[in-house]
Length: 472
Ligand SMILES: Cc1cc2nc3c(=O)[nH]c(=O)nc-3n(C[C@H](O)[C@H](O)[C@H](O)COP(=O)(O)OP(=O)(O)OC[C@H]3O[C@@H](n4cnc5c(N)ncnc54)[C@H](O)[C@@H]3O)c2cc1C
Image 1 (cartoon, protein in one colour):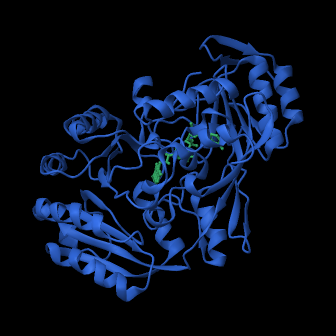
Image 2: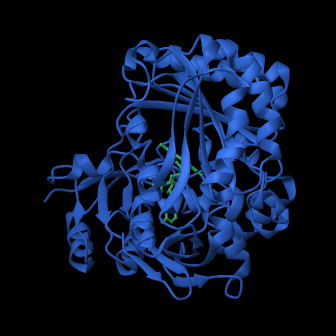
């Protein structure tokens, strides 16, 4: 085997002696892959097809031992290092060019404690893994809405989805983590053990260590939820959104109603003549009895005419993976996002104007309603700072052809700039690569200062820097 060229943390090129690589291979339980190995190209792929980076080495970790060995090896040779959970991060933080990729994807064990209603989840699990196991007992963890998203990245940034208005963010249900520090030490962080570290990882991302397992409290939601999609006409968008902005804020926490402005995909319940047209989709989940849910949904049905709807009792796991196909791996993606203080008439005007110039049929303007249990958690309890804003405006720009990159990215940036006046902070997990100053906007000033302190204590050399970085 020949020497391997790699990049140090300071971006200098160096060579790794072949013997060092072989010694690492011998110490691991999992596989070590270099560029020529079969499977290398599949493993370096992440969700966003715009990211095309070739790591010098990929370690497929089977357990904490492999994570510790990888970190020690990277430190000894000063190799730039990235950590892959589910690989969904839109900025492609899970993979680094000519560095070491610590891939947790083999660590997908899920252990449910049905008595305690808790679950322990491996650091490489996808959301679908957790739903699959917890649903056997009618339980669920409050998390995101696409089953191929990684639990790790989602949770470390905050984590919200269909049941978070009732049950809190993913971090609000996190009981403890087992984590390997930048020194290669395995420790448990919880309210009792390393409490500052436990505070920081709940919103501060992967800046403080590699989580090998998460322990969550589960919610009892049963195996079916009253849920569905109502598809509104784009020509009535102003009237509908004006109704929506007020109505959803009156609803009990058990009801979550969101909004998506996009081109109609060819869904079977939509008439063929609507396919490809601009629409306003209103998806909802109700955690309660069907008759009550129906009453709460009726005003939405009556607010403006609908193209079609698909509503009923849906198996939770099927609902959680129902949107997977619209956001599969490999397309080109660029996101811009902010929390917004409300859907003022001016903000609605911009949403409609940019809806009219949407640059591809796969783009979405995604506006989740966030209030409820998350906004009642005191700000200082976790590092997730923006709990009080009612809505998020997430501009999902998605397309297939590299020739469209400039046009699509420009649309997202212009739309984002045009709605900046209504913004208050950003969700760290919805950031693209937007620079150091922008990362700070995910946090209040006092939270940021506290995060920097924790970073200095647990990662003073900034070993974990392929992330929305908090510099020590
Ligand atoms: C299609 C899609 C749908 C989404 N839906 C939601 C949603 O409903 N709700 C929501 O809150 N967010 C959602 N997100 C955003 C999502 O939370 C982020 O993309 C998140 O980064 C995904 O985590 P991951 O593990 O898949 O990512 P990765 O790209 O693997 O990692 C993201 C970051 O976390 C670090 N990291 C990964 N694993 C670990 C670990 N075990 N220990 C320490 N650091 C680690 C990585 O180094 C990287 O910096 C969605 C994203 C996509 C693409």
